[in-house]
Length: 460
Image 1 (cartoon, rainbow, N blue to C red):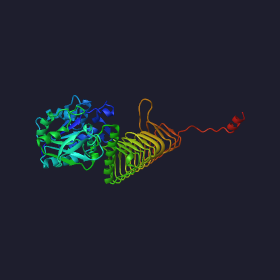
Image 2 (image 1 turned 90 degrees about the vertical axis):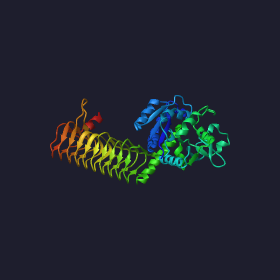
Image 3 (image 1 turned 30 degrees about the vertical axis):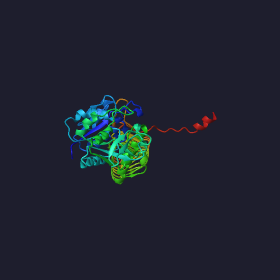
Image 4 (image 1 turned 120 degrees about the vertical axis):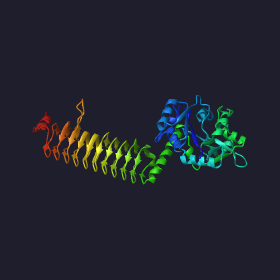
């Protein structure tokens, strides 16, 4: 293979998107547009990647460096067309000899396999310039391909310069080019803005190559949707849908059941094991890891969590920075905050909130409970309405609950406090002192009954 350099055009400001931000920085669920494009480019193992910046230059460069520190940059001072953008990159290619691939930051869906196929065609046919075309009635704004009587491409007419008859052509130009570096520099410098937009069109490279008798080759893409660009908010929605569909297809191939693909939001770093079942309206965010056979019922948001094999996450659960052990159950309507750790077969039920809480194997808090800054031993049972009072207005303290402890309903455990192994806490107790193992602790006000009081009050 010839050496490869890649130019990524990322200077646009997105006029139809409001014009106040760089299109390259627009976010999808799988990352910013430029990041997706860069990752595809880097998968081809190029010798050099040049990102052409313009609008929001510093932010675009910072994003590109976060993906790869080897990226170099060129600056397009005025956005005067794609040809002018490539011209800005030429100084970075002065010492390079080989093939140059031109990509676009606002077209994140192209597959590396399609670009590799273009590269192989270009070298196999010893072409000076090769490009991908699509046969579709989509993409009305894309240029139209013009061929001679022998089927050779002779020029590309931009949509805004087409006659009504030319606009009917279904072979269209998504503008992916592989160009011999020896041809690129002199051809780019000879382009003139003789068009309706008064811009320097990169498409003129094809006409220049045809005029010089250079070898041109074309690859007709199998899937036109790979070449969906982002020029409007509706385009971004379309790109987002395609990215999600691709991710769902991958999950299905890994034996994951996705009940409602249209409502799934899943970040690129999320990993799922085999045999998982994902219900509707699920958000899996950050670096969440889901083990084999996990069930997530629906309306669940997990961020930077670890969920181990066979766990069940029930409806309405939200968790951030939590670790959920094998075969544990969470929810419905539970909230696991940072540093929650649930052991095997532990249970967090409905309307339970935890924070910096460690629950041992088989421990359970079934409903209406707050567990903050605490350790709960194996097989302990936390009754409804229990609160660990972890904050005194100045500092936070821990509550230690031993193995097989039973906490009666509506109890308050005022930290710092320790409940020994196997102890019982009577319902409604406010526990302020340590309780020894195997003891019963009851701390509630004495019940007073005044007979007939209510009857006398009503008579008055």
